[in-house]
Image (tube, rainbow, N blue to C red):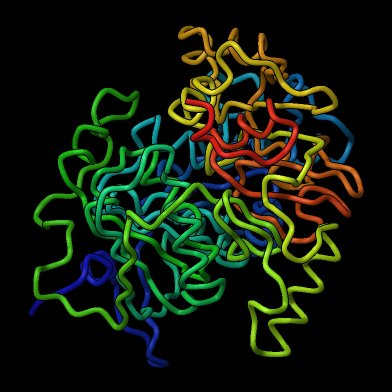
Length: 459
């Protein structure tokens, strides 16, 4: 019987069927952070339970920590970080804490440590765990009660999802990145269009991406509403598995981690790679995007009253007008970082735009490498010098930083940010902050222009 990659992964990890139609699945590896784990450990303590397989878990500090230095920025953050450290010591769980040379954003750290391979099932108390689908692994976010369950049993209750294949076929133009590809997919499928689906990305434009690009695509698939995102393992995947500190710790043999040629998906969508341009978001949802050469939509572009009302609300919050040119939108801040776009490849692309250029007057520009290892590599390549010469602030500590208003990197009310992050919801980067999502190279272009700009003009 022909099966999709998703079905193969679920079948390989099913422990048993449950009476209500769900199943129990085995979790190969579980990642936790300081923000989503405290209640889970409290639950274990209240039930007098231990962690069943401590070696199958990893904890990192990344959400609430400061990136200017290695100290917690306030008492609440210190409490969360200290609590995670105490729980890891108690239960024998590895921790990449502040000051550790392996510390960083969880979805950057795990691949660079060699802790993800095709065929795995990875769970984490963070929705962007879909990132690991880039390796042909099944990754998904879980809630606090599920974190407790996987700590105690290494299993989870699971409901099989429907399957969707998104094919991006054809060569993309120069200047178009993985971020633009996934933003185009989110625009076409719409936010929530992937609810209840495991989404597999296929097509020549996807196969041509390096692993960093594939991780960007799978990372932002959650903005479709998808709880799982997958890309078939191939020679690029195999090459990316070599040379890491934990290479060889996990290996899943006996299965071809690709969808069978005759596999049938519940839904299939095809997008032309040639029709994708560098994109920016104009609204308060990741699917509200336009090409950088276009204008902000107007009510004439929508039919339903509901869509018109959503447009009006987004424009009011964002401080924009109908039909306004995307490139007329001035920015206050440029931010490069997050689990979506803070890898060495992202920093290299932004640095190409910044070489020999200066950040525009009045723009605050910040770059936060996704891990300590990424920072060290970037500094060895001279990237820090390029960023700082251009006027970017180079942060020495890794963390989620300005991706979300959970630490001391918070945008102010009305502040407009060109951001390489994954979400542009109201208040995401701070109360009243206005976020425009784009690729790291596009953030660099906006930083030196002082307004949203077409990266293709900087070659």
